[in-house]
Amino acid sequence: ADINGLRRVLDELTLARADLEMQIENLKEELAYLKKNHEEEMNALRGQVGGEISVEMDAAPGIDLTKILAEMREQYESLADKNRRDAEQWFFSKTEELNREVAINTEQLQSGKTEITELRRTIQSLEIDLQSQLSTKAALEGTLADTEARYGTQLAQLQGLITSVEEQLAELRCDMERQNQEYRVLLDVKCRLEQEIATYRRLLEGEDAQYVEGFAWEGRRWGIVKEIENEPPEVQDGKVISSREQITQAAH
Image (cartoon, rainbow, N blue to C red):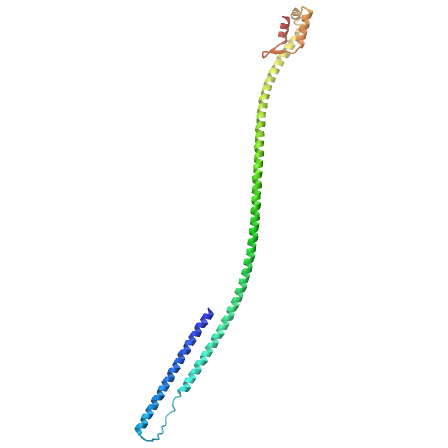
């Protein structure tokens, strides 16, 4: 931009110089034209007089246009040199400033390139780390799926085992209830047998000796009665036969 501005200034100076040169050429042509007219007028006057006439005129000296033009040319050239020097100085100062800015920008650009290179390396390392983490994640997901499948199978097996154990417990509960019921029945039988045994003891001790001797009229039958008394009660058709009934059956 500075160079373009200086070029515009240089073009303006060139145009001004060309304009001044054209003015100088016009002044030269006008001076030549004036000289020619003056000579023609002088020749005409000489022809009219027709002789040699010595005329002495007391007049002011004429204007030296050449000197004036030379001075003007010198002034314009000095002005053009001054403008050129100022333009060159301004151009060099702007160029130096521009070079400094270019150096600063070059340094910043180099620093930016270095930073971009470091960032690219960091991005590459992060991408490698990301790929590694993704691989680890995939491996862990596979391991998790295998573990879930294995523990799901084990859980199903344990659930089946628990179901089997619960069924066995239910069967055991049924068996225990049945055994408990049988135990109650047996306990009831035991109580009744104990009562009957106590009754038979009282009979044996003499309370009902006559009743017992009536049934044991022979030694053989008496042995049968004693044997039946010592045997445990029997169960026939779901009913407990007491010792008294056994004795009666034996007596018959």
